[in-house]
Image 1 (tube, rainbow, N blue to C red):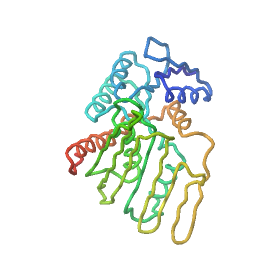
Image 2 (image 1 turned 180 degrees about the vertical axis):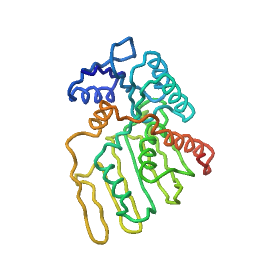
Image 3 (image 1 turned 30 degrees about the vertical axis):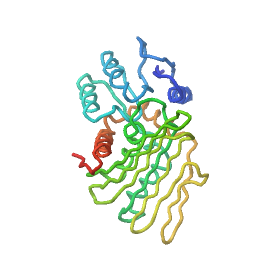
Length: 282
């Protein structure tokens, strides 16, 4: 029986708690702040900027740690955390739900198998309600997109980003970020990030010289692959991406630091937006 502590408050920690509760041979508790707990795994559901301090404290106890991307707000701190966990032989699982989403996994497989041909223009979008704090849109909302992009298409070498933040008459905040990225294979990706009122929504349009893959989370139709000769429907699995992700962690197959390049992209995107010019990813 694995003992799990979900640390955090708000909707994210509640969703994680409910998902852990559905797993077999798992005993889970929800705690608002990290305290002395006798558990096997701590699941961090706290804001990105608070994760480093939690991880450094948990490190002293040798407990396995899991959190969703991003690990930290910048690549330098994320790299230091990974190094520290390696030195202390602490298992740190940094996971991205998109790597366990049937739509995104299937799309990656289709791309890797050559069904769209040579990739040309890649379009990704992600929107969600504004978190209501000073979270960074590139780290919090962008890193899962950057991680899936590089997992599927390879590393990014240059970024051009624009960022707009506005306060509405009712006092609510909206933020938008537009990014153009050049990949090492010279394909181009355009990513639209939005923190607005409303439900979370993601989409992609992946174009190659032999076909196109499209998906939008608000539509009822499953992912479709359209080429000159076929349309392929992929059946959506019953398990949620989060459940599949946590089962992966329980099985001990999590991977430390998989989002480090994605965090580097977020760093460069932030620098590009501030400077108003393209920046190289080094």
